[in-house]
Amino acid sequence: MIIKALIFDLDGVIYLGRTVVPGAAEAIAYARKKGIGTYFLTNSGTRSRAGRVEKLKGFGISAKESEIYTSSYLTAKYITTHYTEKGKKPKVFCIGERGTCEELEKAGIDIVQDSNANIVTVGLERAITYDKFTAAFRALINGADFIARNVDPAFPVEDGLKPGAGAFVKFLEYSSGKAPIVIGKPNTYGIETIIQEHKLKKDEVAIVGDRLDSDIEVGKKAGIHTILVLSGVTKKKDLEKLSKKEMPDKVIESIAELNKLL
Image (tube, rainbow, N blue to C red):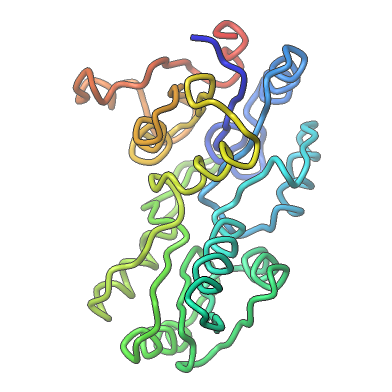
């Protein structure tokens, strides 16, 4: 396959928690040296795009904000686009950490913390309280739209897995009886945005990810090449359960082996 652009997931591919995956900086530098466009698409929204630039910099990886697509940035873009078209002024109740609020505020979106919100957006917030869940729940049953930044059940860190944003989304989905619009992978919104903004051709793009149910699934849905790394959530034994149609195009142990494919 001829690849002119790579879309990298972050957690489990580039790093695990605060630890870089060995060879990540070198692999990205090699791709850039070959003239391959590099972009980063993450379901995580706990940091803003600027915050992701800084985190990558700490691992020896340089990146521009325009190359980074977090679920928070994409949610802000989705809200700004769709609610402007509908002529509504979005008032957003946000379950999420500081990076999420930064992206919403940067887009000029009003953030409210009560049941008068007309949108509830949900992602990971590690210090959330039951009272905040209650306020979000009441906004939903009062008619607010429900937008999930992602529905990942778990995410990888150095010593294993931690519960993901999907657990928070399910809490409110079950209690309110309302299903959310999902912005993050496996929704193709992020990939389609990258392809459109950077004028890419789908048959020349590959996604590099560690999850079958988000990274590989979204790549197949979007019609781009898929490369699975085994450094994160998915392990080799998980591949035994897949049909030929579900299999990634390529499987490598970690991003350190990416150079062999390029």
